[in-house]
Each structure stands twice: as C-alpha cells, then as structure tokens.
Length: 510
Image (cartoon, rainbow, N blue to C red):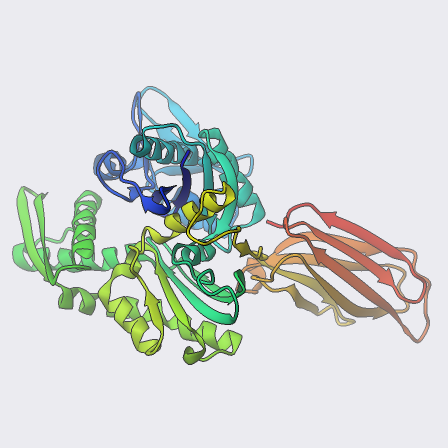
C-alpha cells in the first residue's frame, strides 16, 4: 500500500504518493499535476478542479473558490468578512458560521465550507487511486503555521468524511524541508533555513532552526494581501489597457470580459516562467472583437515591479526580528506556485549570495512531496536512510496575551506565548494589584501578528475572589500558564501572600 500526502492550498491542491523508494506528484484526469481548489455546483452535479474553474465565467455565482480562507472560522472573523466581500458566490451567516448559498435553478442550497472541502479531498483521493490502480486511505495533510487548532480539526474531519485515514497534520514549512531532506542528510549540527512560500492567495516566510533532525520555528510572517493572483490581476489590467488602446473600448467594468482576460493572463504568467514571451489570445472578448497581444517577460516584470518588491520586503524584516543576517541562513527553500517566477528567484538570490537555493522540485509540488515522505515514515515505508520519523516541533499558531489594568484604568497587554513558540511550553507572569480590592481579574487573549485592538480575540478570564485587604500595600500575584502540545492552555493564578488560588483550562486555543 502506498503512502500519500495532500497539500490543499488557497487556490490549488496537489497529491503526492510515496512508492518504490520515492515520492512523486500524480496527475489528475486532466493530465495536470496541480488541481484548482475550485468547486462548481450545477443542477444535478458537482464539479471539482479545472472544469469548475473554466466554467466560472458562466457560473460564477455557484462556484466556490478559496474555501480554505474561511474553513473553521466564525462569520464575524475578519478573514471571513474579506472572503464575503470578494466572493462571487453568496456567503451568508447561519448560526454565526459562514455558509455558501447555492442557487442551482431548482432549489436554494446552503452549503458549508466543510462540505466543499470534502469534495476537494475526494478529488485528491480519486486522483491518487487512479494513478496507483488501488485504494488508498492513509494520508498526511499539510496546514499553514497560522492555522489554529479548530481549523485543523475541521480540516481533519473533512478529510475523514472523504474516506481518508489522517495519519498526521504537519506544517507546510516542515513539509517543504522534508521534501529536500533538509536536516536529514547531516543529522548533527545546527543551521538556519528560510522557507519562502508564495502561493496563489498568500505569502509566508518562515525561518526554521534545524538541529539534529528537529525543526523549530524561530519566526514566521504571513500576508494574505499578496499572492500569485495579484500578479495575474496586474497583468490582466495591463491587457485591458492594451485592448482599450487598440479598439477604443474600455472593458474594465465588464466582469465577464475581465474574467476571460484573467484566465488568459494566468496562462501567460505560467508560460513566462519558462519562456521569454507569451501570446495572449481571447476569442470574442468584447462585442465580437478578438484580442491578440504578445507579452514579453520584461514587460511582465515591469508591470509587476511593485508586487515583486512587496514580495521580498518581509524577508529582511523577519531576519531583523530574529537578529540574523543573510549570511547566517544556510539554505533557502522555495515553495508555492508563484515562487517559480524567475525574477522573484533572482531577487532572492541577490539577498542570499552564497546560500543554496532549493528549487529542483517544482515549487507548487514541494509541500505535497514532503507530506508523502512524512506519510511513508509514519507507515515504515521510507528506506532512503531516514530510519525514524523526523521530529517536528509543534508551535503555537497565535500570540497569547494577558491583559492588566492599572489604577488609571489603562489596559496593558503582555505577550506570554509569541506565535511560533515550540510546544509544550510554560511561562510565569507576575503582576500586582491594589491592596484595597478583594478580587482580581486576569484576562487572556489571542491575536495574530498585529496586536491592535480589532485583531484581539478574548479567550477567557480567571478571577481571584475573597482576597484579604491590604492597606498601603499591593497583592502580589503569580500566573503560571502551560500550553500543551495539543494547543490546550492551563492557567493557575495564586496570591502569593495568602495562597488563594484559581485555575482554568482552555481545551483548544484556536
């Protein structure tokens, strides 16, 4: 029985199988090694992949894209609100959770993100089975570093509903390192590796410390405001301007025509990763007019120059955050489909002049390959010298903060577990409260990288009651916070003078 790994990204999905001593990505029924994570609903059928994506021009309101963006989130989550604003398919609030509203003509269907994800997993399972000629069940799935425990659980459940036996969920940077055997070829010694992932809808940069086969995340930056779709959109806008210059007609306000241009621009973008020029042809783009335009790689790089700069800037910021110089990075691993762009690779090489750039595996396949290797190790099938399972250190997905208020009622937030903290972990947080009060409240919050008020989510609060009043002095309080490997958080608060204590446990920090 083969071992398989599945990477389900924001815009595309990929499945790799480990067989006969090596991991390979397998092609779907269209002959493509990467499948669009797009699901289209029609009267009596559900279509997944390329056909759904191509049919979006005529069936946009019933076509679901970027479902990963809202999986396991509540409707009022900022990520969900962004998705609602961008989605051509109607997204509604049902019991505080996002649901897709599908109108197939006969009836109005309410579809959950989990159901959409299940269909994509079924497509991945079918693809693997077709390639192997036998049934496959055991799988390793990959998740982003900032995926909370609730999102991971929902992803796991969707895969199980599709018939998979989920062996493990591993983080995408760890899978990328496993694909190239980083840390396995020389199990002793410490080194720093940068994993650069530019996918269709997001950018993530992660610095990992590799030590004796263990991967420890030192810092990570995620940005969903830039991705491969931004490059496609910029090129589509350029093509629309060229159409207007040639025919004196503006199509920028015509959604259907622009969607046709976006499809053509995406094909051109992919071609320009290997060719110096690409021809964009769209039949009957507007009022029966055909559009034909040749785009050179130099023109593409000029049109997207600002986007290239935005894609590179986080690298330097992350290095500064962890106090490392470019020379202290030993390897750079590229993953994500847009990391194939030659200009982007050259800019990364310019930052790390004497560093090995790992890009021999197609960047949109790297993470799936790593997942398949991990699956093989878990099933005992790996025979390339990796005698035991690589140790991947679990990390906290979000910043965990405590909130205090001083006498002027000014709120102070202290980060006790920064995102990326290896788990399990324990922290002590000592603070004082006025002696003339008999109860003290400590509040716990989680947040992403931005710690501004709208980004914080209150997790819980713990209250110490019936404290002895202390005139002219303060209550000295010690909070002990323990986060376990499964993401649960246990907090004990103790008043040092009297020993009054309270404890709470938060099952899963999302």
